[in-house]
Image 1 (tube, rainbow, N blue to C red):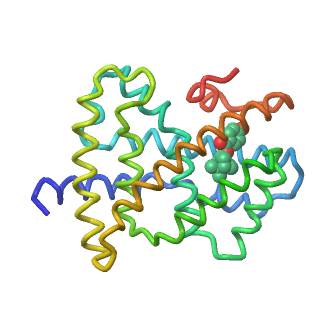
Image 2: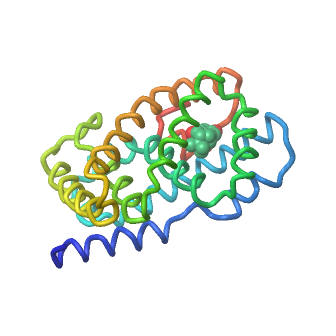
Amino acid sequence: FTKEQQALMKVIIDAYNKHQIPQDVAKKLLQDKYSTEENFLLLTEMATSQVQVLVEFTKNIPGFLSLDREDQIALLKGSAVEAMFLRSAQALNKKMPIGHTEVLEERIRKSGISEEFIKPMFNFYKSIGELHMVLEEQALLTTITILTPDRPYVKDQPAVERLQETALDLLRKMCVLHHPQEPQYFARLLGRLTELRTLSHYHAEMLASWRVNDHKFTPLLCEIWDVQ
Ligand SMILES: CC1(C)[C@H]2CC[C@]1(C)[C@H](OC(=O)c1ccc(O)cc1)C2
């Protein structure tokens, strides 16, 4: 790794570690009582804290704050769902002892999310778990998702491309270092980003079905996803 790459990795890892979902939110998911309403409120709290974590993490990505201000907003809004699924997949596969994943899965199932969405969501979580990513790879994959140049309304795409390429170069080297037996590992990671995009399509339907049943979102979630 070059000096710059080592410095970049340190900044990204520190930011990724600093901005984690508060344990109390994850713990509540395992303690509070069950009811569709209660589950929805817990997931709302989880999603809201995930978006807050995403914003704080993104501000620490070297070069992000030098981008055009409106492009910064466009990248955050465009990547929030994907970054949230990536982050929760990584958290679910790591933090929760096996027994707990079923409890969270139960809550997600009993929160008004339609079955057709649950399946792809948990398939994604499983496919992320099977990769056994190291922390650096998780942080870089999240960074690459956020720095996707072709999000809607991004004006200066080349500026975003330059930042994303730096993160991609770093991730490529990281994969060779941590998975020397798997020359295709880097390509597999990027393949997960394609799968993520299909999830964000389901996510929009999930929000719509909750709204139809008159569920309230928090102001932050309304702002990041342009609902209500
Ligand atoms: C684990 C998940 C990524 C999966 C189930 C909970 C999540 C945090 C997310 O929930 C929301 O997006 C969401 C949006 C609005 C709302 O009021 C509640 C949850 C979908």
